[in-house]
Image (cartoon, rainbow, N blue to C red):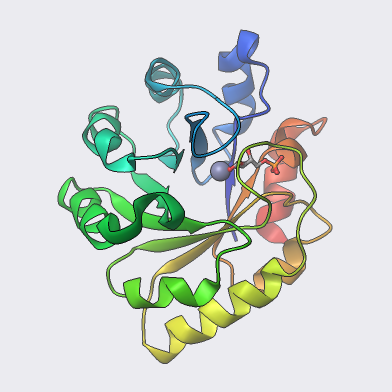
Length: 214
Ligand code: DX5
Ligand code: ZN
């Protein structure tokens, strides 16, 4: 299992120190970018992404929770981001062209969906996306409770990917920790995002390793 710690609940006054505690063991650093319109919260923007890029060796995974996500793909590429996901709910008919644009810029392209979006709506993008981000909480805040129905959504998506011979990855985000990591692996998840369970742990690096090995 690959683990992408989210820095949303980090101590931003000591961000460098927080990053040093996770960078060596992380598979990716997950960056939650919110605009206060698509979600009822604002997190951080490009100056923070730029600062993170100078402090970490792990590849950066940007999760755009914004309207008009296509405005920001080039900027993210220029900051060295390797994976970009945007929400299907925010992209509508531009979804396929957004995926193509992210790929054209040399990044891995992902589509994210909130828990109330039928997972079948992702199926027509199989072959066009490098990964699918299935939210296991409603996007907007760290520290929420894992929604268990997400496991069925992942299993359904995983069977569809296998049926079509797709090697696209499945990422799950929200409320992930030691209590659900085994079930997520069994359901077919490739990458978990873990915010509060990692940053809130006494030893974040050890927690990342436990999640990877679970
Ligand atoms: C929620 C974000 C998540 C969040 C995860 O909108 O997309 O990445 O930071 O945090 P935890 O692991 O605390 O649920
Ligand atoms: Zn996220």
